[in-house]
Image (cartoon, rainbow, N blue to C red):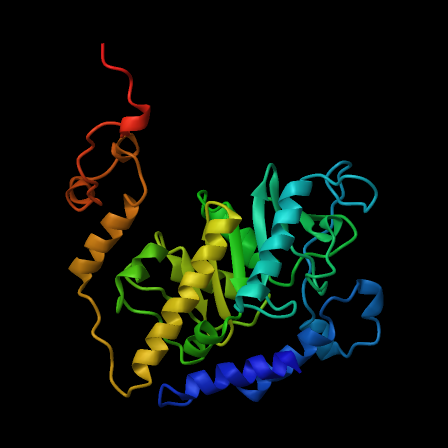
Length: 324
């Protein structure tokens, strides 16, 4: 019931722009039906599938157990704090309203690989040992299969060294825009927080496939940290789970603002590329100390966030040192 309501909201938001969303062809929906028939299932539960359903079954990575890496449910599990943080992030996604059920997922990098939510386990019931460790050779460890979207997480960690955490969700406004195959242009300076002049929309591909992962990486390019996924949702990465979750929420806020502007029947004014480049330079220095800015280009230094002149530590009269 909740998922049906979420889909209805996404559809209404897409229609509010004034044009119908792109509808997936029947053949693709048949593939989706086959995939969802295998969602969260173990290999032993898939024996009665048709040839078509087997062909399009959700593909799990190879399993490779190494002593000390897989969660067992008994005692403290490896990377326990990281696993707890992944669950906490998923629960926060639901509380913030940017995800529902088990449709989104989160992960963070750990030594030797990353930990990611498992397939088909509700987040309010998920235990740390059910958060799956995957190595960077593409193997999972333990009794639980990783999220059906494990490929996107895996390929981001393999391709983007600075990515330490990944959040994928199906928020209302991002999903509505993605169903229109629209990116989020630089209508607001905050678009630059995602690392580029626009927040791109990756070309459509079936969920859980290598094609979707490839499409995502192509959309992110060399600088974007957040992207919409056509007829699907959004995904982003950050230096930790808190910042990745913040960027996911910020992307959804920008999508909402953009749809509100479009719903008037008028296209919002988009900032020129030159201004967005200034925004990118400013945000690169946001919250940074002077010694952290040594590697900036001349353009970035010119447009860095300017702090007021430092006049020394403030000492009030009651605690000033006595005069000699």
